[in-house]
Image (cartoon, rainbow, N blue to C red; front, side, top):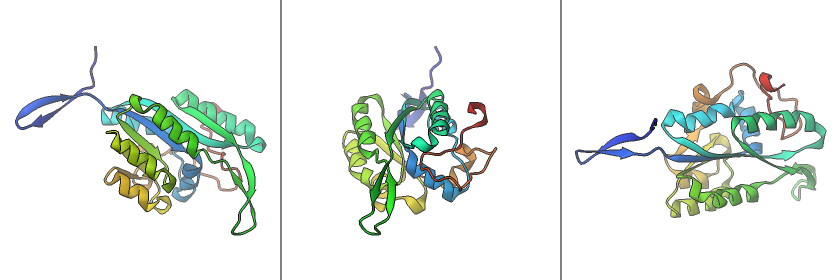
Amino acid sequence: MYSRDTWRYERGILIRQPPLRVSIFVDGANMYYAQKRLGWFIDFRKVLHFFGPAQNNVISEAYYYTGADSATLARDIRFHEYLMYSGYIVRTKNIKQVIDDATGEIVEKANLDVELVIDMFNTVNLFDMCVLMSGDGDFERALELLRCKGKRVAVVAHPDMTARELRNVVGRNYFDLREMAPHIARTDRMPEYDEVSITREYVPEETQ
């Protein structure tokens, strides 16, 4: 049977290292706005490859969290199917309109932070490394607790949208999205910014 175990030297002795089990948790809203800043779309299949086989690791679980907008339901369903067939578990929550206390404006929200953290800890025995695709500082404590449990943690985000607390938790395991374009970017189409729903993403041609 084919083994992806790797080897390392330690004090002159060759030691076999099994591949890490990696789980990926994607904050869809955060990544949507990150892509608008980047000017390119993330290919989420390539994300699985980058953190899995490309690093000699195996993907244990992959989750994508996003709001559900009835006005864009048909398009959203196609994108969600693309994610599911790529290997992601998709979690959705209906978007609600709330009044911003500071501005008095009506804003749309679909906060899935709680669901994301619950999935992290419900599956904690299934992974050695947790990759969080979000710059939201609300996840600081969750990542700290994972480290206390002996898990490796990493963050993938746009630096302009990353809380200092997250960078402090992961240290060198911070992946700047701007530097990841050669590995995870789609090259067949650029983003369009006239979309109003935070759930709207590019649906690859093969899923349309």
